[in-house]
Image (cartoon, rainbow, N blue to C red; front, side, top):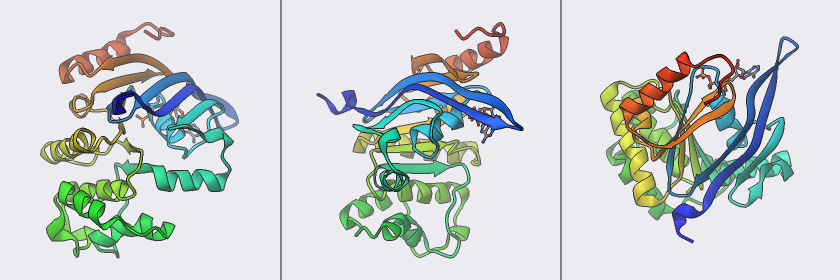
Length: 252
Ligand SMILES: Nc1ncnc2c1ncn2[C@@H]1O[C@H](COP(=O)(O)OP(=O)(O)OP(=O)(O)O)[C@@H](O)[C@H]1O
């Protein structure tokens, strides 16, 4: 089996009902999706369509109301909170819109922090590869406040990669960046998929950001309404615009 045909993450029948002021809100209504190893997927859809809820459930940050999530061969619903925390730590990387770096620590300390907290000895060769890849070799002793937004996001990506996770989940990783800097960060994500066989799943509102992915999933009202090979930013924007014009209740 080639690396790309192996599932890194599978969600099946994924349903999540939140309670808001005592009223149920169905954020996800039975989503099925498989994310193969060595692929880059963008998750898109209108505001409130369930993108972040899908990402959080797939990453084991939130437990679904119904349905299953598998990371590799591990079914998350069978895990205790402790085991789930270990799985997130060892097998999953996260990158958020707000870089979430620790201001009092240097770049290097930020990158190594998750390993340190886990009591895991860093693989120095891999860390050197990661630092080189994100282009921050000259900035390791700097504090995050001395870096640009794009550089800070690159530190966050290096931190996410440090434990060599099976999958990296990104929630609007370029949402706080200008166009040029966003392109650098997206090129970096593309590179870690192509050159290191990483798996990246990224929520984004931006059709240009999604055009760096191999595949685009589109959610609407908690349903998966499109699952397509990445068709280019123009076509992605057309699909999103068409969603705004579809009749109420239609899911395709
Ligand atoms: N903790 C929560 N409590 C109650 N309702 C929630 C909660 N989290 C999400 N929701 C609701 O679930 C639905 C899906 O939210 P979600 O944040 O997944 O959408 P999204 O597509 O990521 O939106 P956005 O693009 O605006 O970030 C929305 O109606 C939202 O209000």
